[in-house]
Image (cartoon, rainbow, N blue to C red; front, top):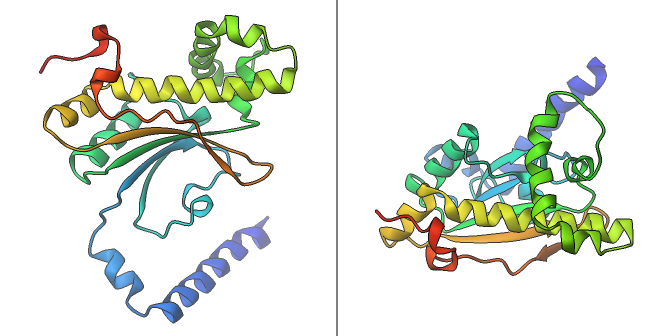
Length: 211
């Protein structure tokens, strides 16, 4: 167990050495502040490292991850990250990135009791309920699973746009675009779901806040 732990510390030293060899000022510049153009809301799955799969360097992506890349209006952790990213860092893009083969989404397709996480997965079950007609018409189980992953991202993108944080930024004229992606763990390719939202006019009237 400690062999793997010690390997992590050694890997850090090697990483620092490589970065300094390439740019002796790398960490000095990082320590002076951050101005990432992107907020990434992704799944906590260990196979989906945000920076690595888009070739981004430290300082370029502000990241929040949770089970199944959910955007819940009661999740203070996610909302705090979103508020800081939008109002302090002034990010230009917020990306919700799901991934095919997501365990949280898969669990939401069934009825197995897992534990505390059941309460989190219930929100994903709501997504299935919203789109039950379309999903139930898909006979192939893998195709249905993949489509459920995509629809979950769709709903989280919509829920981001419904937040007062995003809508107030738009009201002030701040440019913030919300996007939906799905990552293929089996091939490394990101699928752009073409779900970009640029203002609250793309939402139903009931969700458009009046500031």
